[in-house]
Length: 124
Image (tube, rainbow, N blue to C red; front, side, top):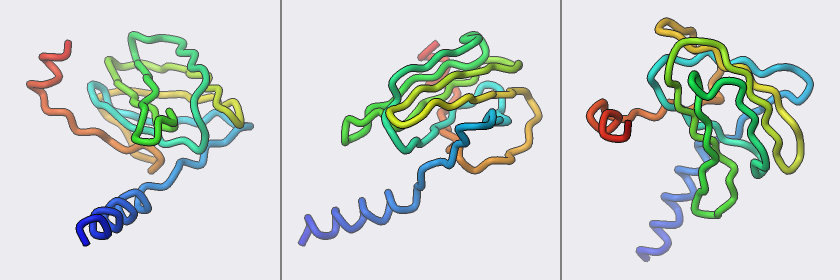
């Protein structure tokens, strides 16, 4: 009975988080807030990430339970514009991150990760 309940709860939690719909032809623009962290879910595994300026945005693939690297952890360090070329199993995507203290949350593809300030200070 416990296994069924655990399976059903995991199923419903994961079904609520859908994969993003990134465009392959256009530049995908994300407005993000300075000193925050985000999670981006993809359809296929990440093969290569080219970041134009790692001082502004740092991106790392996340290995999930399935060991698939279909998630990206995006850490915003400071204000600016950063272009990213992302290569996955199926396609190549161009991303542009615009970070600042004021932002408009236009896309719902990014999931904001709330990290407490004292943990951020310990990590740095």
